[in-house]
Length: 120
Image (cartoon, rainbow, N blue to C red; front, side):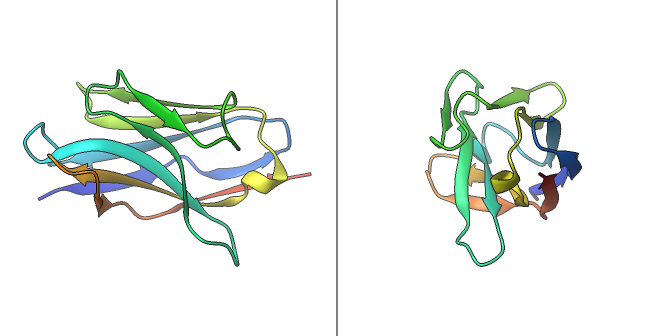
């Protein structure tokens, strides 16, 4: 059974940094594929901000975070990370990690959200 647990959110001033973690128990090359970080701000739709392939060699970023956020994976720890630098108030949102089912591109597995609040 795949279980994702996100952590690392908090309150930071604009221009600061935060690092999120997503521990993925039960994820193997046979059960999970690519992983991603989504966020949802109040009154807005959930959006994908970063994605990373199973191997970690491929990444994708939304234009709004490109150059500021970096996704990475530690296969040994079965954990995905999101390093967020130069944070802006508009980055404030509930951040979720998710994983695709192996062989598909649909995000099937979801972790609980972790709140990121950036003050101006």
